[in-house]
Length: 248
Image (cartoon, rainbow, N blue to C red; front, side, top):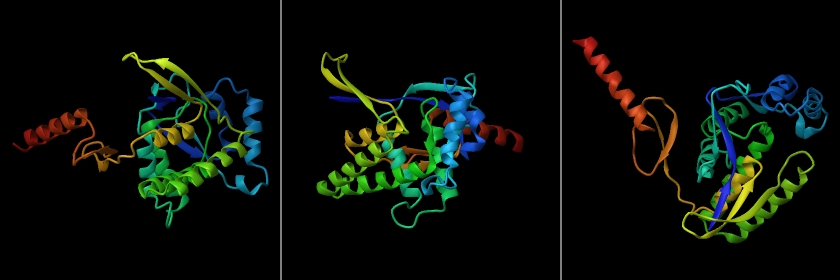
């Protein structure tokens, strides 16, 4: 058995995209360990004339303060499915939507699933991750293991290319679970690694995609469902009763 571990923080206020040079203060507040000098130095990387950094965007919390409302928890299994759905919605493998619409869909994903404290999400890189996720799923769905292996090799090469700028390492160890069975625990140090390993160790079953009739958030379920949670269902019923009361 294999367990994939990655701790995320889901902030109630959500996240926003912006230019790195404009977000130095938020980057510092989000990760207090980063000094102002280092934050500005990182922003300076994106202001360089290199083609890959031109007109770039990074993700930060709308409210980056350590006292903001948030839930810190292990990332849920099969999160890769939500990420693949973003790839589907944005038509990333055929005729991609405009970048601002792709950013909007990714923003919803991050609001739902969060990201680790201080982890920098670069839009150009995450757009590339969407395409990789799309191709990986299609290769496995078609049973094309040679193409799947080629894509994984390509992904590994890109990860090593970014090694000098991003933390892309993981730790693996063994543990004894509650059923007295030994399992391998893979501790991911970044969200993309988690999504990648989550996909590779999953069964690849896709749930259907719905929009909650109360909060209007997208959610996944294996059959038709009107509400994403019992709370939304109760709230919708309460509001219907209120409307009926006013109509009498």
